[in-house]
Image 1 (cartoon, rainbow, N blue to C red):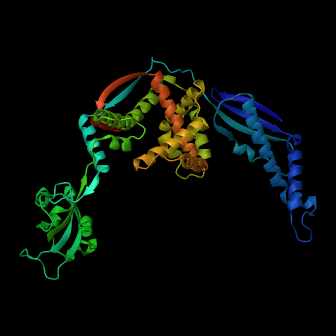
Image 2 (cartoon, rainbow, N blue to C red):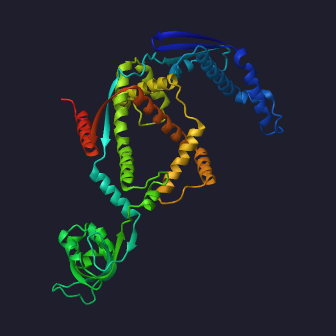
Image 3 (cartoon, rainbow, N blue to C red):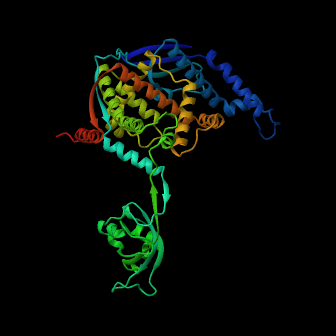
Length: 462
C-alpha cells in the first residue's frame, strides 16, 4: 500500500491511495469462506456450496466491500499518523472510481480530497472587549413576584362578600327581552373569575355581593370570546346562537385565595436550601433569582457578540469550495440541501463553522472537560429543583440515582446534558478572560434595545 499526498492549495490536498493484492486478498478470501459456510443452494448441503460458485456469485461485491474497508482504514490511519487536522471528512473522487474494472484489475488507485483546518493563533485576553448587559431587577417586579408566591402558597377560603380577585360560583339563568327569566330558557351553574372579565362595569357589579344576591349580566360584553362563553354556559360553541346574551347570575359561593404570610415557614417552602429568617432576606433572594432568569437572555446576547468578535479577530481562512462539496456530499439524501439553498445560507454556515473551530481550540487550550460526576450532579440538582417547584420534599438518593440512570441510558438526552455543561464552561471562560463592557439596564430596557437592534440588522440593504 502506498499513499501520496499532494497539496492542491494551502488548505486542501489530494490523497492518492495505491492498493495491491497483498493489501486486501487475505481479507477477501476470509470473507468468501465465511459466506461459503452460510451459503444455501439447491443440490448442496448447507455450507457445502463449492467455492467456485461462491466466487462467481459474490466475488465482485465482496472484493469491492473489502477493498473499501481497507481503503477507509488506510486513509484515516494516514491522517492520524501525519497529524493532519482535517475539516469534515475525506471526499472520494467518484468519477475516477467508476473507471475501475472489478473483474480484471488487481492493483487499484483511489483519490480523496481533504480539507485542512486553518492554524488558529488566537488567545483570550482583556484586550478583547465585548458588550455585556447587566440586568437590574426593579422593586415593583420583586413586589409582584413576592405577592404571586404568597398566592401560590396560600389557602382557599370562602368569604361572605366578594372582592375583585375572587372566583364566584352560581347559577346563570337566561333572560328575555324584558329582563325577566326566560321560561324554559337556559340555566347552568358554573364559576366566574371576576379578574379575567374584559368589562370593568361588569367587574364592579360582581364586587361587593354576597351569597343569594343576583346580578344581571351581558355575557357578550363581559366575556373575552365565544369559546369561553360557551364553557361558562355549559353548551357547545356552535350552539351559542340558540341562546341570548343576557343572564341573571345568582351567587351561591365565593372562593378566595388567602395569601400566605411572609414567615419562615413560607421561606423554607420556597427556598429549602437557604437559611432565610427575615422578609428583607427573602426579597433579596427573590431579586437574585429573578436576576439570574433575566441574565440568561443577556448572556445569550453576550455570547453572540463574543462569537462575532472572536471570529472577526481570528480572521480564519476556510477552503470554501471544499466545504460546499462536502456539505452537498454528506447531505445527498436531504432534498432541502440544494446547491441554491447552500449558496444562500453559506455565509452564516461559514461563521458557525469558524466558531466551532475556535471554540474547540479554546477547549483544548484551556483543558475544558465535563466529567461523569458533573453530569450526575447536574441531573440530581435538576430533579431537586423540579420537585421543589411542586412543593415536594428533597428526593432520597435512590430516587435521584434512578433518575440519573434513566437519562444516561438515552444517548440523545445524555449528549444534550454534556453539550449544556460544555456551553456553560465556555461561557464562564469567555466572561473571565474577555474585557466586559458593562451596561446596566432593567429587563424592559434590555428587551427594547435588543428588539430595535436586531430589527435594524434584519432590514434589507438599500
